[in-house]
Image (tube, rainbow, N blue to C red; front, top):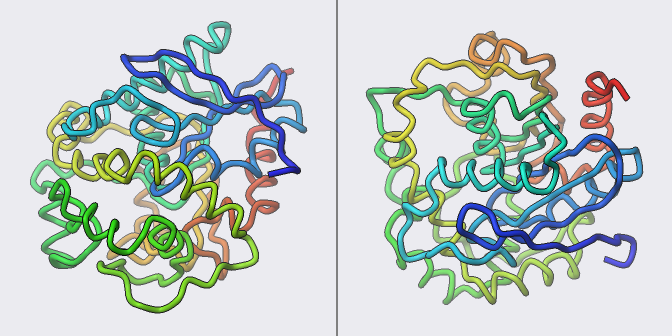
Length: 320
């Protein structure tokens, strides 16, 4: 991490003590929202780049992750989407009270959270760059976990994550560092099933031993339960968001996904993204970028390309 220098800060928001990293003094805030199994650290390349280009980059550890504390992990309902979006709205209100709107960048679960942030509080988002997980309109007739189970079976990772304590025991046997390595190096465009196979973890050029060790140092302290609780709240989120059935995302959006991302190969997703379905639900969708031969963790795998895509998009909304 020698090439990066970040300010680590804490702020009390929505009943938790949120850790966030900040860099840059520009007039425009960029809020980076990470996914699973990640941390603020997943945005290390983007934070520095955007700060160097005149933005104030802010990347929190979401509730249940990293150095953010205070959310009781024994009850997955503490991780429902209303609470999580509430954390981020309050974070922005406190650290940037002069900002009516901020730029937002999301990936994986962070992308899902960003979609909901735009549905709940479009007034807070100037423009959004979302990665990997496309907008998913709510189906009032199908709960998410039941749908995943019917489509993929009991060993699909989201289904395996549902029983509290179960997958945590499996991960403990495998070892924190190996679990993280298996997730972060997964490049099969097909569905992810658990348990992992016995093949060795071979780190690609974009993910160093130091990177893995940083993730592992945090997950060794916190465990995986906080992040897993987001998946355990999927059906609760479905119940809580009934009022947004049919709602459209009405902020400007650029969407980026790798063609080897398991999310892009899910049934119906390519057609939805490329043939007008997503544009119908996200009417201000300005551009879709499909990166060739790129996997799920694209902001780490292709930082230069992602940095440019983010910067080029946001520049169009900067008046100063």
